[in-house]
Image 1 (spheres, rainbow, N blue to C red):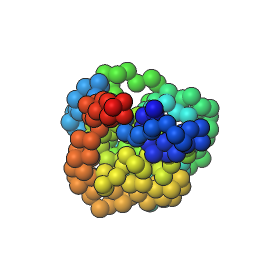
Image 2 (cartoon, rainbow, N blue to C red; image 1 turned 180 degrees about the vertical axis):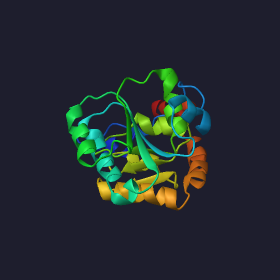
Image 3 (tube, one colour; image 1 turned 90 degrees about the vertical axis):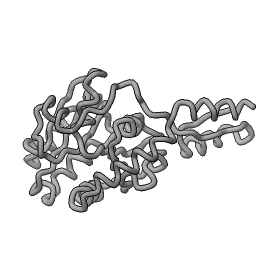
Length: 225
């Protein structure tokens, strides 16, 4: 039998076996990083403006994760003329010069805050606490642990329509966009201009109930039975 974390992976398995039982259950929330830190306290800890507008890109920086698309979205004149900034927190597992070049060419030094170190477990909650929305501009994906971190810390998400990401960000818990920097920029602007944070956060909290560890074990036992 197979347990997959997204429908897209279940479809992949069919290429190898169509007879074995296969079920889908999303990965539970990552709840081992501590409780959510209130936004003002988190921003004070990270030395960010208390009244700023911050989107978060979190995790290892690899080519498929599309940080270049987020940087290009931040270069959109509508965003450059706003108070919106991107916090990029994670180690580079790709050529850092590629991203530095985009920042330099579009004069994004004041719009993008880069913390390109490994983020210790006890610091993760501050980055999520300080942000308004988590952006996952992936070019390819099966699923992502960052989504489940966002659920744990009760943050809305902007994800691209790849792999299993749209399955996680449903019921208006965020935006699902194409792999396109303009659409990413549009969704960031829509989020702030239409004051979507409170409403989407409520939906994230409601959806979060589905992603329990007990639900995962139940699915496994049901498959065995």
